[in-house]
Length: 208
Image 1: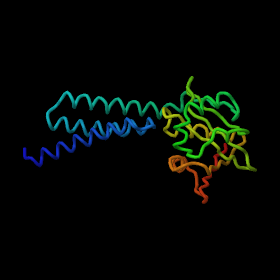
Image 2: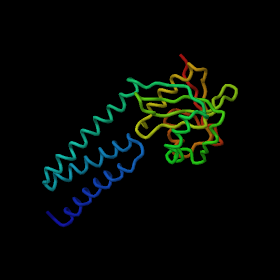
Image 3: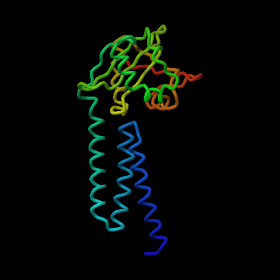
Image 4: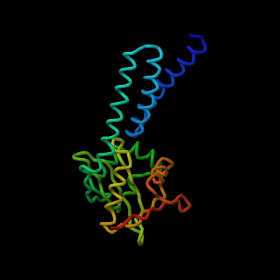
């Protein structure tokens, strides 16, 4: 094996290692697992090429485990999400916001907990875990979002999908947001919001 081949192999190994490390920095469980799958798969190939079979076996197992966990995440919405009415002044809302404030500001950089006063919305639970919440105010036929947040463990679009299907049953057929940062804008585009200009994104909810 030539020196160039050895260097190329090392680059493959480093690439796999970097991706695995980067995956650990993800706040989204879905992104964590997807990037970890890619990194572990690359590292599996690298380990086979250098004939380190125990390392190859370990990383191949990580690929299988992550794929299995991803499938479970995508199956979760059909099992036991529940939705409960909340108000911005509720003690639960204060606890939730305090707990996740740093992460909330990644998606809503200008968020101030005082903005929740007078808002109404819904909290989503998976079994006994708080998975997310939406709070806002009605403006004619539009529900203006003050906060639309999902905890990292459930950040696979399933909470939003669940919420947006049920909101029409509660009289909300159009939702709007103009206070989200780049990370939340990406989420809104993934969820089918339309850019109306001036940083306002609007989604028409399907009614039954």
